[in-house]
Amino acid sequence: MSSDGIDATRTAPAAAGGPLAAVEPVPGVAKPDPILTASHIRRSFGGLTAVNVDHLEVQRGTITALIGPNGAGKSTLFNLLTGFDKPNEGTWSFQGQPLNGVAGHRVARRGMVRTFQLTKALTRLTVLENMLLAAPGQVGEGFFGAFGWWMWRRQEQANRERAMELLARFKLDAKKDDIAGSLSGGQRKLLEMARALMVNPSMVMLDEPMAGVNPALVQSLLGHITALRDEGTTVLFVEHDMDVIMGISDWIVVLAQGQVIAEGRPSDVRSDQQVIDAYLGTQHDEPQGAKTEEKP
Ligand SMILES: Nc1ncnc2c1ncn2[C@@H]1O[C@H](COP(=O)(O)OP(=O)(O)OP(=O)(O)O)[C@@H](O)[C@H]1O
Image (cartoon, rainbow, N blue to C red; front, side, top):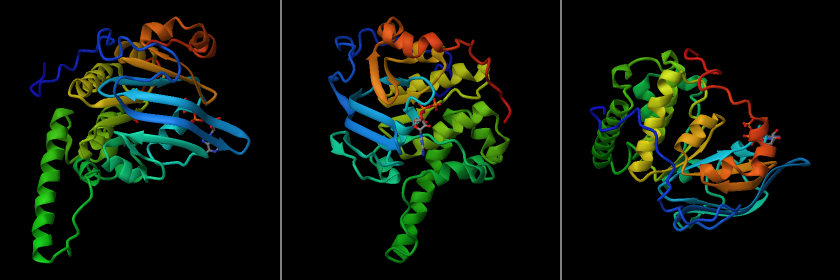
C-alpha cells in the first residue's frame, strides 16, 4: 500500500455482488442507477454508418469497458458522448441532464471528462504546466478590478495545490518541472489521467489507457483505475488488452459495426457466441506488454 492509500498492485474482482448483479446481460438493458444514458445515437461518414446505438446505459460507480474490433465505432462513440463530434441523430444525458449540443469543454465542466493523448504542443510544456492548463475555467484578471485579481490569485493557488496533490498520487510530483515529452509511455498515461482529474469529474472516459505502457506500469495503472472506481468515480474505458478488460471491468459493452451486440459481466461476455464470432475469435491474445514500448 502506498502512502497515498492506493494499493497499486491490486486489481478489482468483477463486481459479482455489486449493483449490476441482477442486471440481465442483454444489449440496451436498463441499469439500476445510470449516470449516462444514450438513445438512438447514429453517426455516418458518407455512406458508412460508424455508430448506430439503440440504447446504452452506464451504471454509476462502476468500471465499464467498451470493446470491439478495429473500426467498430468505439472512438466515434466516445467523441459523440463527450461533445467532440455531433451525431446525425440521437439523445443522451449525463446525471439526468441532456447533453445534446453541449461543447466538449462544457461537458467536462459538468463532470464527464475524457483523456486525450498529449499533443505535440503539450509535450513541450512541463508536467506541472500540463496540469494547470487542464484546470477548470479561470476567473478573468480584469473581472471586478482588484477583487478579480484577488480571486484569480486564489484560484491559481487552489489549482496548483490540486495539481500537486494529483501528481503526488500518480507519483509524478518529482517530475513536475520535467518536460512532458521526456516522460516514458506509461508516465504519459498517468499524466493524461491526472490531467483529466483536475476538473474533479464524476465520470472519466479513458481511451486505451494501457497502449504503449511497459508491463511494469500496467499494474500501477490498473490500481489507479480501480481506486478511482472505489472512490465513487464512474470509469468508461476503451481497451484492446483482454487481460486488462476481463481483470478490472464490472461490465463490458461490445460494439461491432457501430452497434451494441452484447453487454454483460466479463463471464457473460466471454461465453457469448456472437462476441466470440465478432471479436474474441479474431483477437490475437497477446500476452500483456507484448506490443508495448516504454520510451516514446
Ligand atoms: N472522421 C472520419 N471520417 C470518415 N470515417 C471515419 C471518421 N472517423 C471514423 N471513421 C470510420 O468510422 C468507423 C469507426 O471508426 P472508429 O475509429 O470509431 O472505430 P474504433 O472502434 O475506435 O476502432 P479502433 O479500435 O481501430 O480504434 C471506421 O470505419 C472509421 O474508418
